[in-house]
Length: 325
Image 1 (cartoon, rainbow, N blue to C red):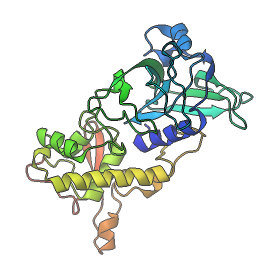
Image 2 (tube, rainbow, N blue to C red; image 1 turned 90 degrees about the vertical axis):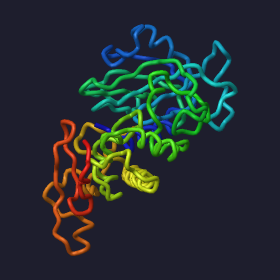
Image 3 (cartoon, rainbow, N blue to C red; image 1 turned 180 degrees about the horizontal axis):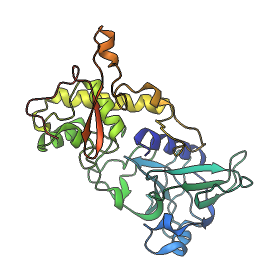
Image 4 (tube, rainbow, N blue to C red; image 1 turned 45 degrees about the vertical axis):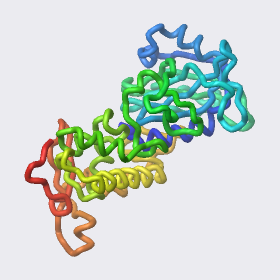
């Protein structure tokens, strides 16, 4: 499943290729991939035809493209990605487990699992189609209303500063790569929970976008055990795990994301290679890199966790006596 750095790779690619272009055609190849658009294919297409994509934004793993609203005379771009008035609707994309957003030339054959095709206004030397491809059909596209953000700050990562977010994503917390992320707010939410630290990091109401892989990597870097009770955390420890989360995600972003199979590709079809740099996740029985540097022979251990696995170093990340799942 793509995690936050992979989705940010896609967002940046889409912002490069799609923002500022008008949607000239919509082909819904498989209606299952727009099932979240309750009014069906005809309404989905009607909302998109003739609309201009103003920007590409993200919170956690939710991507959305604010659309020009000609009925309200909005969406007149000023040249810097902003518009004269805030948009009212957006095209939302969620990649699910295997969703891909690919830019293709019109002469390229359809992908085996093509679900939706958007034909874009021509721009010199650039592909004219945005295709949504999804093998497992857990992801999808839909058009929805934008609502004000709870804190009055911009909705998510991107260039636009509208304090708006898709209604369906309004309940999730900001992610560590969000420019408006608040350490104080995260610490308060963690202290208010009486649960284990990793469980809290995976809770989208506490902090969004940290999946199983990056939680293990951040906890290893911060030297904190996944079962550490959140209500015992000091502010400095919250800052440490947050900085570790940001660091591991930024390194993954630089590498193009983490890829363990052929299902994840970015907007131009290139897989990420950060998996080669993981320190804990998936390394059961292998030496802990930090301990090895000190001449110790500690091996990474794997524990069952929430029907998944959690990887940690028993020396660097000792389990607390009063640890919680």
